[in-house]
Image (cartoon, rainbow, N blue to C red; front, side, top):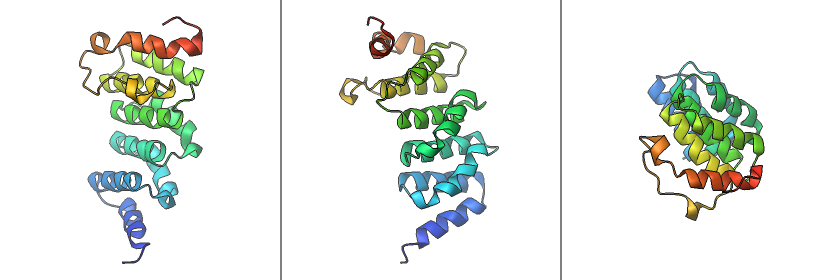
Amino acid sequence: MNAMQPIDSLRAQLQGGDEEELFDALTDIGKKRIRALEADVVPFLQHRSGELRGAAARTLGFHLRAQAHRDAIRHMAGQDPDPEARAGAIVAWTTLLAGTRDPDAMRTLEASLRDRAAPYLVRSASFWGLLDVGGLPRDRWPAPRAYANIDADVPWELVDEVLAPSFGRTA
């Protein structure tokens, strides 16, 4: 098998097909970390489908760690009208900023997490992203679970602990 064959096949899949096929191609590119198709993924950040926008953001930010697209992904994380796309963009954006303690990112994530009007997916992604950007060691992260009632289930003392060093707060 020619080494270019999977790349050519995925590129062709991105040129046409239904949304499910496009989603599968974007996901494969990310999971296989095929950097040669990065430019082919970028247009999907503007796709009409929120599911495909989210998949493109995750592929570029989470899987490929493509810093060149950080601003576009950041914009999606704050502005995308589709909660699933926005949550995917938050995951991608915060992966690109992991451990940086970027104060603007942390303020944005905190505001999103505390926004009771924000969709569950967005608030949940903001919680995990805050831990990632804040540099909390993974062995200190709570076990993943569905936070059906974020206000009651999120360990707020951990949120305060992560925010404290960046903003002079006491945990």
